[in-house]
Image (cartoon, rainbow, N blue to C red; front, top):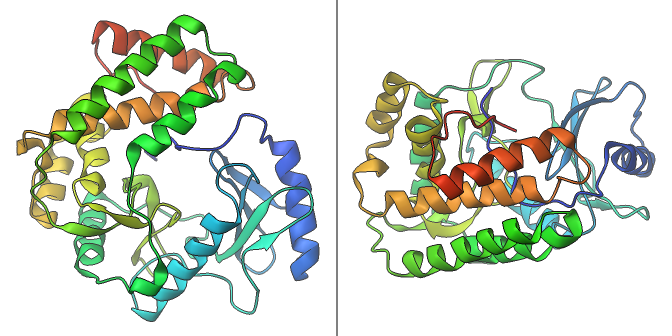
Length: 310
């Protein structure tokens, strides 16, 4: 599986704390947490409950709190009403669940059941279909603002244990990219975007249908944002082949790499990925090692082919 790095979440949000939240939230909704399997620990802790085919997503109370979870729930319900192939909430549960230990929890149908991730052709078709939707104003979707995320991540690097030299370098890079971003001339229509579109957020359900998951970043923005991770994974990281990328372009209908603004968006996305790792250097040795590798790559403009997906 190739997955994008998350873009939020604090280092202190540990598996141990997430398990406390899981137990409390399951007690609130009357579900059995026994035997829960931790699938991922990033911006959210993601568990699979063996009883009832349920996926539980837990966000720390800091950063992505109740307001974001509430919007995600409303987006999921709207997409279900549109019969759009996306993650579905568990019915009969008032969501999100906010527990006293500080977690914000949502419960989802386990559509995948441990199965396969979608391919780039399926991701392209999902994005093309998503981008045709007209979102209702009542959803109150925010605008996709990459530098609000960058600023928030930069603000916590010192407390996360990142050196002053690395912080200064990343701050200067962010300032430069912000100026370049403001001068971009986008060519695709402005509208509904997934916000974290990559093959790691597209799965196949038990019937083989491709679904979009991880709806936290659904927002209004330039459609180029939903194409940049796939281009970046192919072009700089080598996580997709030339053939896979060509099929993605053919089925979506636009090659982002032919647009002059692509290098700027790619640089911004790289920076967001590095900053996410920087927030975890004090608690995850593997993240600390990868952070050092990535910062050195940016400093020297070296090859990104050694970057490892998180």
